Image: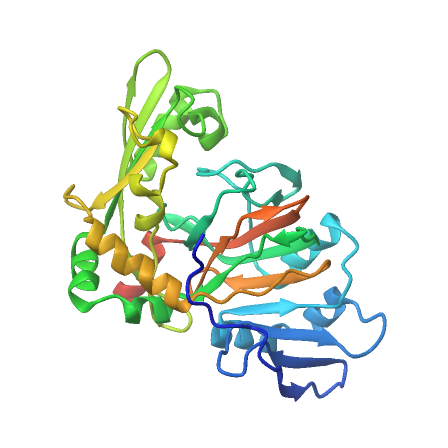
Length: 343
């Protein structure tokens, strides 16, 4: 498989600074790129939780500047400590509801990363950008890197937006994205898993509250339609970012076996229902490819992302791989509108 043009992170690392307390060093993995910032302990036995708790304002500044921070060499003890890390770096934890991919809850609000087959690429995307509510804070914890590949590529959503031609950006800004999902029949996740309930009434209540159109069909199948913004403004940095999953939800991203189904598991259109053409999708995918940053996982790594500023994905891999994920700090389209009214 041809690889996209990647910004190689084998470039010599450039020292940025040593903290005032001389406990950690902060480096850029690639001299020409500000994403991600890497923080490593230079004192044996330094607790990541302790350091984070004592440096939260500085950490938030780094996260808003760089979009992502890689903590390396801190040796977290496991999923419980990763959950404690998530609680330390965020205000409000999030459970994985209104799901779009298979995951397993490990404990609390810690989940496995997406459980797609190892040979499948997960395109770069922002977590839950297909919904009206999404996490601002996202983190991954590598317990076991794959034997080969299995990286979690990342890209700056500000730079992705800038690379997409202006006429395409404007059309998405004007119309948004219509996400259509079909649940049941073995096509994708069943609605019971997506909505975390067996009760149809609960599903219907959720959909009404989230402005999701729905219809039941067949014996136990559900179709939903929802229009969401395609471009967003970050609540803290006020940066404008590309924030949608049009290229990921689009039927062209489905596997070959699903291309000829009568009812695709999912698809994406412009918000008025018109087709997103192959040419437009090619421009979007090219923008992501040009901004992709790739680095190999090391056991114990923790990657902290600002979910609106930074997209992520997954490369295919061989051998066992275990990467956990956590989400926090929910933000919604209603919050966006409220911020506009205040300003």
